[in-house]
Image 1 (tube, rainbow, N blue to C red):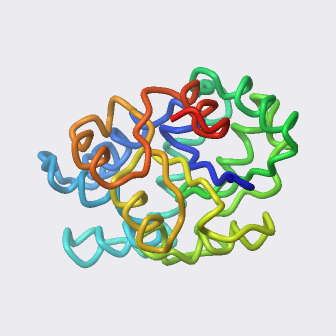
Image 2: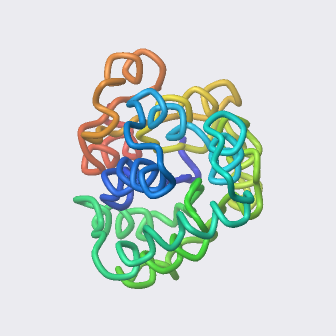
Length: 219
C-alpha cells in the first residue's frame, strides 16, 4: 500500500527540462567555451547545482568562484521559473486524488529552492506539498539517497511504502537502491533512457495520469 509520494520537480511536475538543457551551454558560451559538448550537458544533468559549479571550475577551467557560478546560473533561469514554465499534464488532477485519499506528498528536487518555490506558488500548488527539499538541505544531490530518506521521514512513511516519481535514470536508480517504490515518468528530454528506466523502475508511465492507476493498485 502506498502511504506517501515524493515527486521530482523538473520534468515530472513542471515542464522545464528544456530550460536546463540550454542553461549550461549558455553559461559556458558566455565564458568563452564556444563548443560545449553534449557529453558535458549529460554529465551536468546528473549533478547538483553545487557539484556542477565545481565541475565547471575543475574540469573546464571556468575562472570564477563557485558562488558566482551558482548565482549566475540562477539568474539565467529565474525568469523562466517566475513567468513561463507550466505544470506537466494531470498534475492538479493527481494531487486532487491524493488529497481525497489522505495520502501526503512532497517535492525533492535538485533545483534552486527559490526557483522551485517561485514556480509552484505561481502555479497555485505550493501550499499543497508537505515540503520542498532541495540542495539547500541535501547538497550531495540525488546520487545519494539522503534527500529521499529525508522526504519519507517528513511524510512519516517507510521507503517501501513511499512512491518516488522521477523522470531521470540516476535518480530512479538511487531511490530503488534505497528501497523505495519508484515510478519513472516519460519526459522528452530523458527519452533516450526510456529502456533503462523501464528496466530499473517498478513502474514506467507515459504521464502522471497513469500514476493514479498505480496508487489505486491497477498496474
